[in-house]
Amino acid sequence: MKILVTGTAGFIGSHLAKRLLERGDEVIGLDNINDYYDQRVKYGRLERAGIAQDVIEYNKIVPSSLHVNYRFIKLNLEDKASLETLFASEKFDAVCNLAAQAGVRYSLSNPQAYIDSNIIGFINILECCRHYGVKNLSYASSSSVYGLNETLPFSTDDNVDHPISLYAASKKSNELMAHTYSHLFGIATTGLRFFTVYGPWGRPDMALFLFTKAALEGKSIDVFNNGEMQRDFTYIDDIVEGVIRVIDNPAKSDALWNGKDGRASTSSAPYKVYNIGNNNPVKLMDFIEAIEKKLGKKIEKNFLPLQAGDVPATFADVSDLVEDLGYKPATPIQEGIDTFVDWYVEFYHLSLK
Image (cartoon, rainbow, N blue to C red; front, side):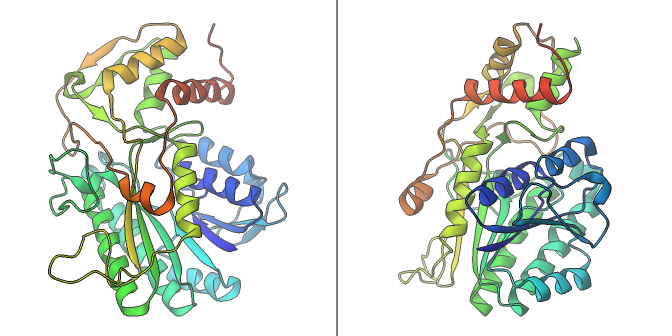
């Protein structure tokens, strides 16, 4: 297939592009390479795919020096005219939209960034799919949509009408917008509610990166809710495998669905929402202990209250993913952390000794 993957300078997008290229798909990568976090990591992800920093220009497609079937364009999703030109010229078979303004806490202080990227950017993607014949769209949602829901594990059929951050609200909005376009225009849309993704080339604003960095610099870490947190940490390779299965199996209409008691995660339209999580929540203190084990040192901890916008626990019900796509994430937490730390010390030219 010829696939547009947005967010390919990002964590999940860079790994997804790599896997798609390895199996022979043609990939156009798109990213605006903003400065939300350390751009060295973003450019590093692109460089390992053969896209050198010095050849990147805004709205210019550049070829990879490593993959004949990979090209990249620096572009804002809010730039509708340029996005339309891209869709018109490239004629994609499928689109996977992973580009977004990420982060729960950042949304408290910079709400406009989430409206621009996650709402305006997403409607531009939907409109381009509509007008340029793309019937296969998958996109990143988030476990954050569960908000005040306290029923564990989180099910895709649970009510998600009580978000507690604008980031979560923007992701819930994406799901509603996608359903509308599935219903009106027959576009197969699948939303992917990711649960705390981690692994090599991970985001510098995420806990694993922050904790590892602080520990290697001999600094303390902030542990919120006094350590009484659980997260369904999901390793990046597991996430990518789930995304690829979704791309290969576009959403279908549910013939049994009705407007009285139909499931929230399906529809009479070609629409679907999946959780992609490990289905095995890990206590935050156990997560930190696994980092300490790999580093061979104790980390000093500052215990703090729960932050605004955060939830105490996440736990994914992935039964739909197993039933529909025959897949369940399963990488053990220690294995995933070990791999991340090995990458971290290599990328920053450090030593564990």
